[in-house]
Image 1 (cartoon, rainbow, N blue to C red):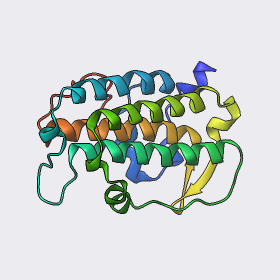
Image 2: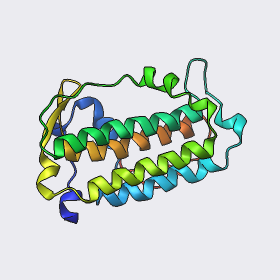
Image 3: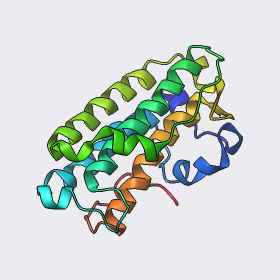
Length: 186
């Protein structure tokens, strides 16, 4: 079973837009990567005070709390797609507007620790799904936001999306995020 979880998706298994995420993920069992990388993301953020957690690097940009809320929302969307397609559901799924979700989530009203705990819970559910998918499910595909995507690609996109935002937290928010930890080639 581990072998199927270690196969990197081919470029034709996902929209080219997501290549920037997939390329960030190191080789290996994607479920183990998902387990390890979330800790490397959360640990540096637990040390932030409230002022820093409510900071946006520029006007109109998301705060650190909003980034964490966005990670939760996006991972739920990616995993929902993986569940549906992995179970053989061929119903085309819509896209989602992250820029509408973030304000609606009111993440600034919550504590940073609460958001980080939620991210851990979301990740635990993600890992449980991917760990227990039958081998045949990994190569099943479906249409999301008008584009065909494989279940395998959705696992790697989930991991790469987090790594993308981890890099932004370091580069634009000035939070030391141990970028070398769990990051693949960019």
